[in-house]
Image (tube, rainbow, N blue to C red):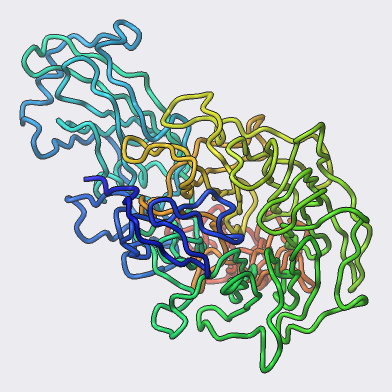
Length: 615
């Protein structure tokens, strides 16, 4: 059952001090930059309908209902390692389903469009984190078809599911067979359909390909929700979020906060509190750090922490100001104000993990809730001194606008938004990628325009990108807001955005994969500004920082920090060192003579093993 998206009422609600009718209450301040509307009046703070609960998965053990519990659940190895074929006959489907399809003549896709099923969601070429199991699958039946066969074929397994429904969500066991056992690989889904009253002919949908990550995607996602008027927190694997700030049990629980940023190590949160006034708190304690004592609250729209979390760059009314994140005191000349070109406004700052640059929006007008004529600019920072900004992406022609830039985890790429006209409520918004060293912006076509498995879908307001933290190079992940449709459950709505997630491989001509709906959300709410950062207890954080890769390997927020390690390609056996930085000393597969250890695991020790190598 789909909950009502809007409830018409003559009552008014006060949001951040502004009275608005509940049936179309635009959230004021910077919180509404992502097309958000107030929810259906339930005010449940995110505990309403999310992705749909799978009756065959009552414990929800692949996700968490009680708050984030980080970590790679199987220690970095597959939670299952099945091979071969497996059939599942869903409740309601006849036990004879396999024989019905086995006796039917299967017409290939393209034979008769009116009779053929059609996959709606997920879209072709979506990549999923291996730790997200509760993914809804949906298709159109075609003709009078009422029995469906879903065939998932991967390099290690072939899984067949029989159902009478036009939607399906995998149980843990099914996910183990389909995804876990094919970690790091692609699986092809083919939907075949027939009518039980005339099962002689079966019709086939166009096959779609899904990809699964090799490792779990960690980090906590902190996002703004209209239902809670505050910051929600979830792992990508969660079924439901929890409200993080303001503290639901605190006296200020109903105070509106928005436009949040977290430090790269996930230990500090900055928000616009109660009307775009800066407040910084510790994570997870929620203790107020800034303002302190009798200090007056500072205006704040958008913020970014330095990689070590010690400084905070605050954008407000088109001005950038650097402050101490412990005391709130301005840092540097001119009371901390950063020099920018005359006649320009600066907003949307993001500090690189290397600490040497800030990327920001340099616009001609606006500053807080919206900006016009935006260019993507780079501002150098070295030893407490700001350099002169340089334009990375220029605004070309009347109405061109570029905004919300963010550095990739390795600082080599910048994701940003391009739109026509003002940034606020811009349905023309699309995400692009540009090398941080300069170059031609790259369109993310699959991410932007593939919706419900259809290409060329435009004006769905893709905005506010943030990257998942990563400890290794390769495929990265981006969360963003969009007003696009989600399967048949939620139509596109120009004023109610939700969070979507897509994989990014910068080595590809189109670096993006198709996006999937973040399954921890409540559908009736507007959710955006999905800031992704480290959380306590992540399993993929390295024991050392690796020099030269631009990535924060040890999850302390700083990339390539002083004291980082130069790693060898392979481990040198027997020297008592962790040469390849895998956090294990002498982690060798070559047999070493005279150390009394079966190094290569073949059951033969030292001189008994012909492969032994003298030290």
